[in-house]
Amino acid sequence: MILKNALVLQNSTSEVKKADLRIEDGKISEIGKIEEDGVNLSGKLIMPAFYNTHTHAAMTIMRGISDDNPFDVWLFKKVLPIEDKLNGKMVYYGTMLAMMEMASKGIAGFVDMYFFLDDVARAVEDFGMRAFVTRGLVDEGGDDNGRLEENLDFARRWNGKGLIKAGFGPHAPYSCSKEYLKKISDVAKVEGLPVHIHLYEASWEREKYDYREVLKIFEDVKLIVAHAVQFEDDEIRDLAKENIFVSHNPSSNLKLGNGVAKIAKMLKEGVNVSLGTDGAASNNSLDIWHEMRLATLLQKMKDPESMKIHQALEMASESGAKVFGINAGRIEIGMDADLIVIDLDKPHYKPIDRIKSHIVHSGMASDVFATMVAGRWIYYDGEFPTIDESKVVEEFEREYEVLMQGDGS
Ligand SMILES: [Zn+2]
Image 1 (tube, helix red, strand yellow):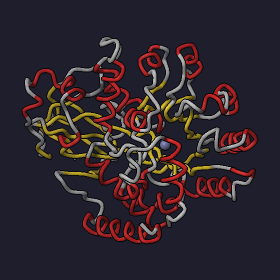
Image 2 (image 1 turned 60 degrees about the horizontal axis):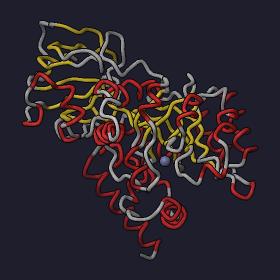
Image 3 (image 1 turned 180 degrees about the vertical axis):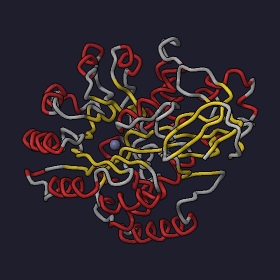
């Protein structure tokens, strides 16, 4: 495939230039003037795709369920009782709908924590997106009801199948015992797979456990840390490790009243920080454009120099690719072709010579014309070429009805 006549932003620090791209076997194989016919993308910009490094995709089925409650009420009174009633089909279509939303907003891959993992993985396979799939693990009352076993069985069957990667998803140190976390760490080490956990999201978590103990338990595994809101200045250095990847979820953190993570400080200390949306029950959109801008503005609240354009772009793209451990996030020969095409023919992209600033501060998800994952379009000009869009929406709505009837509301 040859993409022609577009402007190209190769990475967060490079300048926008005019170039054609050749895509072969899912990778970028040529950048420059190509004298062959191809897809004409004049008036558009090609840049590295975005990654959503923390979500619970199937929670689209609970979007808007609890908009004005504190975190504990949201989780224990609203979300968990409904999750008890979910089945695999609901999770499949909830995940499908989430991927439609994400693909249309320029997201090439997501890190998930949920259950009914086979249904999540089948949806991901059918859609053609990248996903890091982990099972939510808890052991309340000292019994995990076979969840870790289930997670392990899933990981062995699905890790590395197509674009799917597997990991382990201990929910949080307040819902998992220390012994259980150690067991998970041991299994993850043996399997060579990452662990995805919520850490220091709410302020009350500081009284329940010490984050140092958790980092110590997982010191030998790749650790994807969601939220990290409650870390103090002098503690942030502890997150600056090669094996730790912080997923910053500013909308969810604000909406649930958990606060603002010290992201500028983290970047200064060399912490790997990428962006996540969290689930649609706490955000409520799966929109990395929105998170990128909000993340920037929140850090600028007290110091406008604290977050630069290139840092925001890097968190959304290249740093997300690093979480997946893939050779993507930049447009270079030999790298995976995870790309987005942005329609520049909009008033908010003028003047045209400051495009990078516009992407962060005036751009929006609806500017995405197309999204490519590993050389294949998963969204193109308003359509989803890999799925039957109307069937997915219809089935999603039917499953939602069934779920709500079961809830009696
Ligand atoms: Zn979460």
